[in-house]
Image (cartoon, rainbow, N blue to C red; front, top):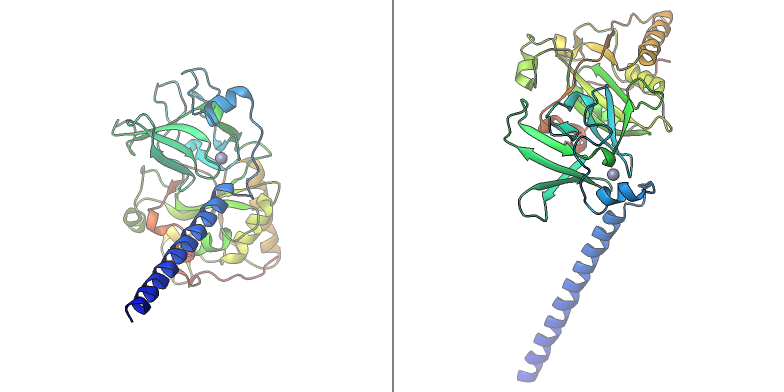
Length: 321
Ligand SMILES: [Zn+2]
């Protein structure tokens, strides 16, 4: 009888071990797939790029291409072309490397540096080494400095034909973001505030109606896969552009319909589409204004519907063109 119990115990142990091996195999398999990221195309790197991006070196201060540039535009990962930083967040630090007080949310990863002191920053998509992040220096309102090697990035000015940045305000940003992040060719969307002057506004301040800010969505897109015009048409079809200082059940100037253009082409496109809507009898109240600084909203507002599930209460797709 004892031997039967002993055999059953052994069998139980074998099953337990086999189960945990399979479980860890499954985990490894998953993380391996994540690490490979087969959809990301990596650009070949020259020796100088490799020394920083792969071997985690540092370019000499005041030697890089972008340490003193402040042209409006977007800084992309040199290796995988993911959008990393916007010129809005770049500031003069005097350190000799491009300095930003915030990265595009979720695009830059922080990890302890091997030196045991600093915090390394890498591209969250391909792992390219970017530089280090420092906090507590009191250089800007965000009290943060992303110190980035120029050679880890490629800058695309907003004025160029390859520009892939658009800003739309059409009521509650949860609903606008819901539609844009599903759109093919869109790489990244951010819910935020634009149109006011107070630095680093909070949701409560924007809701007070004293700041002139509108809830808006900043859209980063691949101009090879989609176009500004296509996105602007979508914008007019996911909200009601005839409503003034409201959208659906949301009332207030922060819910106004507005396009904030980053270059003249975007302005022309926006005005052309408003003209088309007016010809169709739709009296669009959409403001067309040059982009001011865009401030990302609090973390809990980002990707609201993707994280919480459900569909927007405030935005419904309606074909208008
Ligand atoms: Zn990258």
